[in-house]
Every structure is written in C-alpha cells, then in structure tokens.
Image (cartoon, rainbow, N blue to C red; front, top):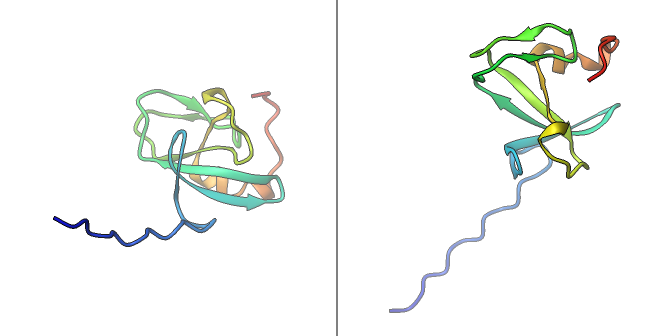
Length: 98
C-alpha cells in the first residue's frame, strides 16, 4: 500500500507555544531579555515569587519562567505569580537573592 504524505506542520512563531525541556512554553521579550514562560495550573508544593517575595501556595495558578538563551537545568526556573510576572518591568526587584 502506498504511503500517504502528511501535511507539514507549520513551525511555531515566537509568540506561539513551543516545546521545551520543561514542557510547552512561549517566548516573551522584554527589557530584561528573552524568557521562556510556561503557565502552571497549580503545583503541589510552595514556591516563593521573586517579584513580590510572597509564597505561591499549592494549587495556585502561576507561571514558570527561565532565560530563553539558557540551556541550564531545573535550577534556572523561577515560579512567579502571574500578576508579578506581567508587571516585572514596572517594579523594583525584591531584596531577596534567588
């Protein structure tokens, strides 16, 4: 039986989700560089948001961000409240060192 040719999948643009080491992510550009950003529906553990230095409680929807040009590991990811991530250009960083 002859093989059927499958249509080529279009390549994702920069503003579309793309596969990454940590799951589907989109690339966002800002004054602080390019970042891979992935929404998280809720985690099973508590994280500390680098934007406001408050806890992100288990089950709270938030985003995970890491530098787009970084091929590092899990230690490069940061969990942010969605609002803190969206307003990071208008805020001063927290005094806590990541």
